[in-house]
Image: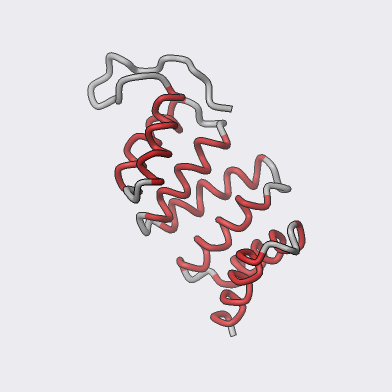
Amino acid sequence: MVQGSDHGQDSPGTPGGEVYDWYQRGLNLLESGSPAAAIQVLEHAAAAEPSSRSVREALARAQYGAKRYAEAAENFRMIVEADPAEDYALFGLGLALTRTGNLTEAVEHLALACAMCPDNKHYATALRHARARKG
């Protein structure tokens, strides 16, 4: 859950508002096609609320969208470590690992996501592509 506490209002470079505001601003930037700008805001939110899975997921999605795949994998991995049953984080981790070339681990995480949600076509397609690249 994203807390509404005020962090770092007086720090230079810190966006105005509270963590929830940063999270919402980051999501809006991400949805409008500006993942690099979203990262800037979401990194502040993640620093203020490091255990927030919703902030971590948004940050990981932004990093993936900005082609910062290793960083995206790291944030998705943090979510999976906190909740191994989080299928979307497993999917995101698998996608990011595919992009970094770590195909063995990518297939493992994508297969878990598919096992959890066998009807999800996005998960199945990503798994097929990762397996094909792996050979």
